[in-house]
Image (cartoon, rainbow, N blue to C red; front, top):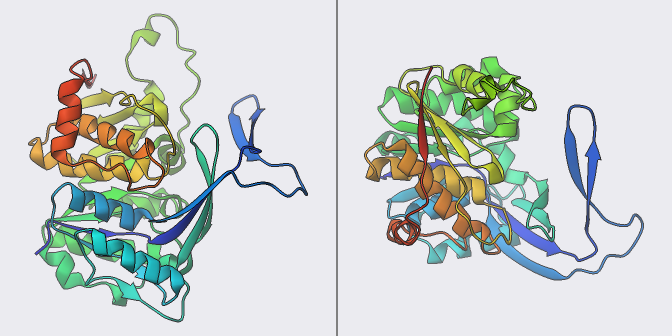
Length: 350
């Protein structure tokens, strides 16, 4: 029996950094967008280069194991140089690999991550085997024996297994944390709702939540009296639409602006935990999986779980690589003890 089984992607990530990269901002009436750019038609010198194993299934499995949970991972890889790198990586991580799927007819997932001088990144992703998980690949007996099923973003044909796997887990009393990805969201809210109905915890970033609900968080032009409300009405509307069952906790992250959670009775807000930013890759995986794990050790203290998640996420962004800065619960608690001013707030629904 496992404490946690994760299902998601596994990739070989190549990080590329160049001082020649520029950040270009494009403004419209309703939106500001930023793009990483390079001189067209030029040969660009690489300032720094490294490779790491990544992907949502890998990142979250490593985090759960590092936090002390007995963890197994479901992901699909090929039989090539990249798959060998992924399997070698796990030799130093306490993650069970008996549920991985290997198919020599498909290439292993591969990504090139273009890192900016600000620490943000643009990912060029080849999904490969990650988009080819089938229902017949899943060890449902292992899922049945787990305490928690953590679903990292899936893509391509792999999204077709979501409905079956979450229904099965829910029917067998397995808790479900669903970290929605754009491939699932693009299938429409009707499709998403079937999965949301079975999930105990749902985590999205604000852009994903906006895409899923078709609700935009408009610029704050409320009158002075209403602007004193601590939570934007559009964010409230997102939470109300995403929460389709009483027992659910919905989390919406907003990058450097912090994270919100909602349990049907209260809203919870936690700011980011300050620290250096080297690369943001893996920050979302660390946040979502730490939040799920921390709910157990804090006895469902949602605000404190948000704090744990923010601290661990800050550790990841402080280093180069999606799993390099992961902390144990003891290390997270030590960080919080050193920063007694850091906290969260609760807002009654009303």
